[in-house]
Image (cartoon, rainbow, N blue to C red):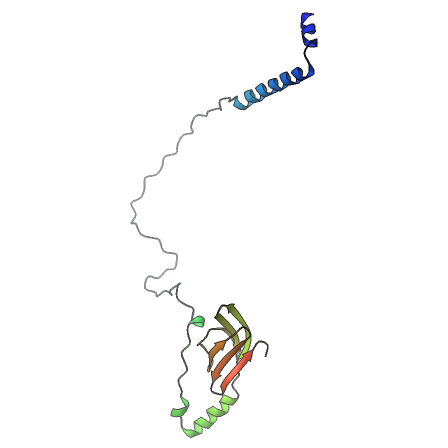
Length: 170
């Protein structure tokens, strides 16, 4: 009975504090209670085969031919290489052939500007010449036309027919 009288004198705050201390002790015990893990005996280690005495050189893929010349993976592709100016052949031809070649020249397709990309003076023009469309930079040739100026929406080219101003969509 004395115990009951003792618990009646405890205030509610003291009871809550005692319960919190008990919970804290229980949590610490659970956290630090490390049961030893089951340790299994190591499995039998399979014998490692002895290393073969092989030469220290790389293995080449199937179908590799040592004498064959391979292309350089870091070389600029042919379609992006600078194009050399076509040589003037018309002066060396006889007059009968000159008239035929000049007649053909009038029917040659003119370049058409598809778009312009770039910024800060580093422009590239996408020009369709004939049935080929690719990007050109300043100084390159699109057929017989040389690119002399590229702006945000136009390109100036010089060719056998003089200077042409190409604009986007025309």
